[in-house]
Image 1 (cartoon, rainbow, N blue to C red):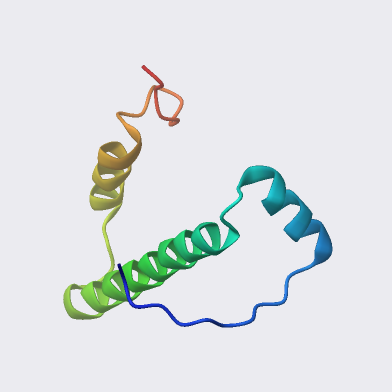
Image 2 (cartoon, rainbow, N blue to C red):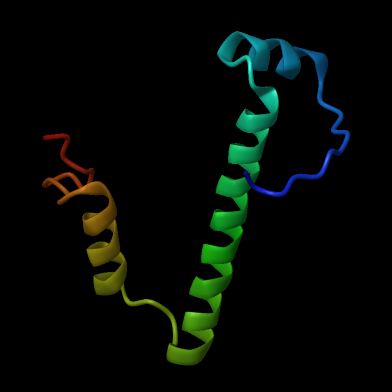
Length: 82
């Protein structure tokens, strides 16, 4: 089991009520949300470092990334949901 630390977090009452509807493991739910946000922040930092070293992403690179993430865009520029 992973090493854990007990902390106190204050949330709005309406958020706690919604969390209780979704899960009986609020700590696990919050831990996963924090992990997802940390990954998001680290990825953003990596992308900024890449651009500082190699320059801004080109439109072609951005289109390729979108295609790999969301699928090939259709004629209207939105991803196709096959």
